[in-house]
Length: 80
Image 1 (cartoon, rainbow, N blue to C red):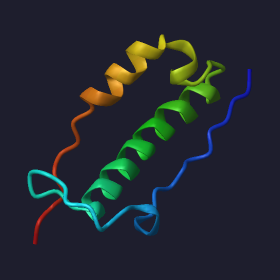
Image 2 (cartoon, rainbow, N blue to C red):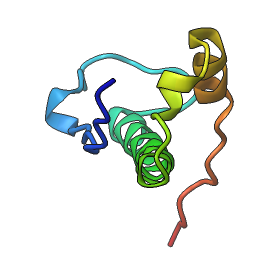
Image 3 (cartoon, rainbow, N blue to C red):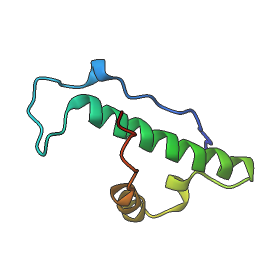
Image 4 (cartoon, helix red, strand yellow):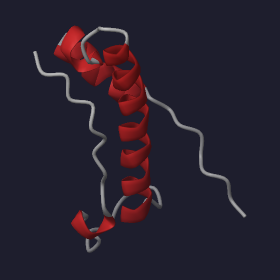
């Protein structure tokens, strides 16, 4: 089983900034949230692989992994 632990990076240039998002959201905030999630999963996967285990997505059932991702709650960014 491959043990890829490269961290992906979401980029605002890849987002559709022309659409209207609900609840005051914007594309930049979505990209930031995606990158926070990537960072979190990368940290978990890197540590897991360093200890000789598979990546989180490889050891969990798919439904459990998607449930975990949907429940991650990051604190809001600091506001000036």
